[in-house]
Length: 252
Image (cartoon, rainbow, N blue to C red; front, side):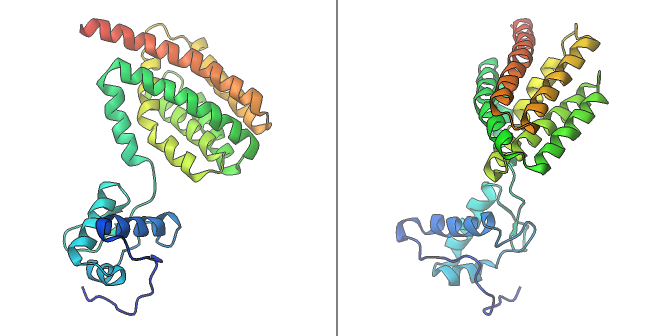
């Protein structure tokens, strides 16, 4: 590929410290990705062009791109320039997924993490009430109602609802973090749905708890939203962990 010396810089780069050349280059490129100066799917400049702009060698530019690829911020193909990826919680979600499937202790810790994080999210969502987030929460509720006794569909609806709660905060970083917890949500929801004694009334009660969270957020009642999501976790997490306990006992 012919490198274009006329291309306008998008990195606003400062010369990186000699002791951390690749880190400085990757930081500057990541800043351009997060600031929206480079859009998802857009090609990054070739290695040689990056090297010239930052005043570093091609191997340093290559290492910076390797770091960004490992972080899930860009993707590369042999013989082609790197391209920006949409910024999501995908990389951390994989780590959480491995963790919660590794042991009951990690699953308990993940549930504790969710309770701590989502109570704060519920309060902020009630204060901000971003329309996109409220719409996603509504869609999640609708999907739950049509997925009663369908664990896979219900789990997907549950994940969508909680993503909507995060989006309702209007905070991009919170949205990304909620995306990173999908594996945790999926594990808990699937355990909850595996209870042999789950009745129609129980399915409806789960929907009602989500509806109560939505109503509180939509009304802008932060105290009630926090109260409702705490009540939801008390019911859902306790039941799912009881199932996990029994499964662990069988495996011993």
